[in-house]
Image (cartoon, rainbow, N blue to C red):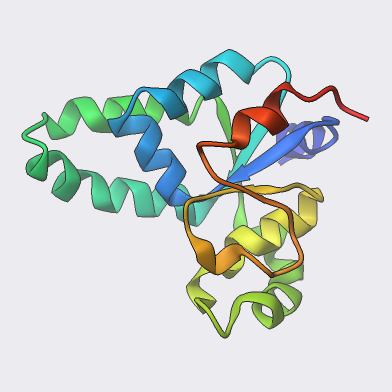
Length: 151
């Protein structure tokens, strides 16, 4: 928990949803961005996103005729770059997060709550996050944020 609190202090941070984790496992560009910017940007995701990614990997791997075990190993490698935020850290923001996202997808409240906790934008492909009062980046534009000099 102390390590996570220290990571939260970093000046430039970004919260990832489960879809971005999956793109990092099954694609090249997202993982490349994570690796290229891991020293200058603090990447985070709530613990439930890592759990969701683990849950979906077997089906996606089977559809793509990929080895499930290798994909899970790739996720573990990505989890070394992305700080996994434990529920106890973002739970205090649940009510506020639900007020922002409930009409679209209440199951996404941990991502909104984590972004509120960290005062960080969200990297996602899910348009449910647009308009919740938190900056949101999609993969084809996120490098603009990653490259920008912190204030």
